[in-house]
Length: 137
Image 1 (spheres, rainbow, N blue to C red):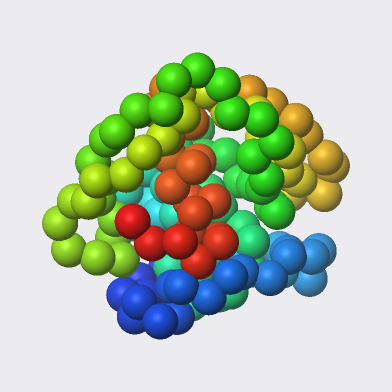
Image 2 (image 1 turned 180 degrees about the vertical axis):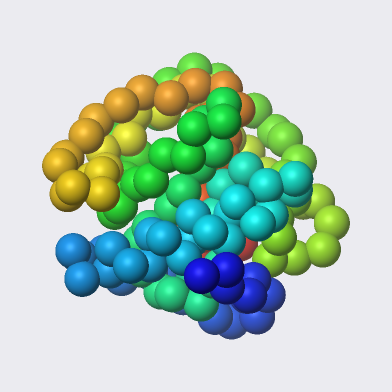
């Protein structure tokens, strides 16, 4: 089901709770919602649709990657300044991101994965993990 995008800054600043197998229906709602906003959205966290769980979806070159309980376990490369937009607020804001990150997460089968991401995909993941941690750019 396509959900409404949350813009309330107080709600978005709350740290998300760990996702469990019982939260898997949220993945479909998140996927439906990001696809509905595909022209202006490359990543989405569950709190953006009003679900305070540690779940993100990232558009990785046309493939939607679902990450449950993602955690950056290593940063690599330079830290650079960039500007990012978000469906949860108007305009763009400056932030800093790492070029490359190693992320531990669970897939939809709750199998643990560890993968390294770089460049724009790494930037998107960092933005969405910030959402899960209640950090707003």
